[in-house]
Amino acid sequence: MTNLFHDVNPGEEVPKKILMVVENPSGYRGKLEYNKKLGAMFLDRVSYSDLVYPVEYGFIPQSWNKYDNDPMDIMCLSSVQTYPSVLISVRVLGMLKMEDTGELDHKIFGVPEDDPIYNSVDSLDEINEHVIKRIEFYFENYKKLMKNKEVKILGWEGKDEAYRFIEETILEYQKKFKKGGE
Image (cartoon, rainbow, N blue to C red; front, side, top):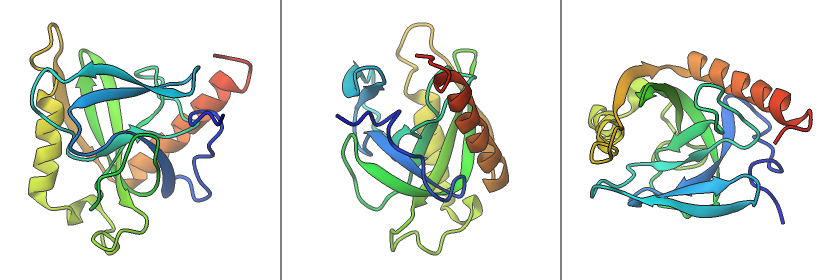
């Protein structure tokens, strides 16, 4: 059985285009999490509110974010809803920076490589302002009903910073797992 975290290459055109593994499709109200050791999706929790994911949400295979000790989060604005474990080739547009309960939490943002709705979109500035506000609203509020959880939006970064961060997380993965880590 293929392990979507360890066995899937993050892509041939990293960091501009990167593969993502969908954990939570847009419109989903739960929180699925990929178990890296077992290679399977698990229901981490049911949302404490009625908020649903406004984007396809998941992780970049063979990446490791040292700030939150997890694979690199990625979200994709798609014109179609997908399913858990689907791979999407994402054209990177930028990155959302957050703080989640005192811990830095970065999320790469992009659009599907071949989605006719977004084919001409080349930067964050070209995404409708209301869409950006909806994404921020979701992440600012999705944990508010949980005890001792607080999320702060720190802002957005463009492509260059997102590219740098993706490369850093791929190097972190190589250091952590290619030496016989987890």
